[in-house]
Amino acid sequence: MPNTKDADLSNVYSKILMYAASGFGKTTMFGTMPGTKYLVNFDRANRLPLEINHIDVEYDDILARPEIVGYESLLKIILSLKERFKQGTGPQNVCIDTGRDLYRVCMYYVLKTQGKEMPTQPDWGLAHERFLQRLNDFLDMPCHLLVNFHEMMDKDEITGRILGTINLQGKDMPNEVMKKFNLKLHGVMEPGSKPGEWKRVVNTANTAMFPADDKSGALAFAEEPDLSKMMAKIQAKLKGAPKP
Image (tube, rainbow, N blue to C red; front, side, top):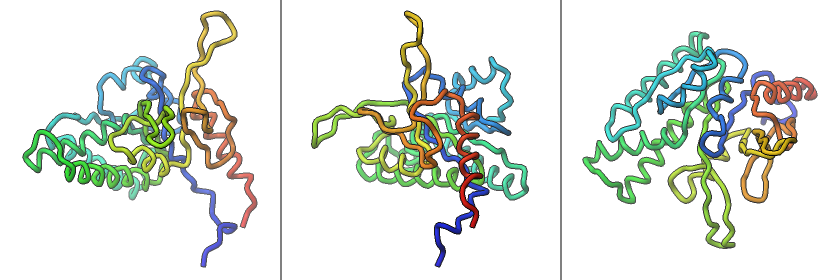
C-alpha cells in the first residue's frame, strides 16, 4: 500500500479559497498569480480591475440568471478546459468569481428543469449536488485554482457565538466547501502606520471569528494580498521537502 513519505510533491497545485468583504480586491489578487490565467466570470464588473491594470487574463462570462443557459455554458467551459489540459494547452491558473454565483447557476438550472420559481427542500438538495459536482470538476483540473467568495456572519446555534464564513447557501455547505481546499485565505483591512491609512492583509490561519488555513505551513499568519509571493513560499517549501 502507498506511504505518505513516498509522495511526489513535484505537481502539487494550490487550491485556494479566498473570501473577504466586497471591495477587498479578491479579483485583483487573481491577477497576481504567476503564469497563464483563465477567469470564469459571473459579473461584468468583476473584470474591471484586471482590465484597468491591463492584466493578461482569458475569460468567459456566464449569465447567472433564472434560466438554464448559464449552467449549459458552465458545462461547455469545463469540457473545453479538460480538452485543453489533455492537449497540454490549459492555463496554469483558473479563477471562479464567485463561488456563490456558481451555486446560483446550479440552482437556476434545477428550478428551470423542474418548472418552478421557488425552491423546495428537494431542490436545495439537487442544487447542492450539482454545485459540488461542478466545483469538483474544477478542483480536479491540473492547475492552480482560486475560488472567490464574499464573507458573511452567522450565529452558532450551540454556543450563540457570531462567526464568519463564506457566503453560500445551506447550513452545512460553507464547511463542506472549505474543507476541499488546501489554502483558505481571509482578507481583512487593518490600520496602517499613519493616521487614516489602511492596508489589505490576508490571514492564513484562524482568528477568533474567521477561519483560514494553510496546509503547507509555509506562510506567515498575515500575508500581503499577493498570490505570486505566497505561492513562491509554498513551492520553496515543497522543493525543500525530503525526497523519497
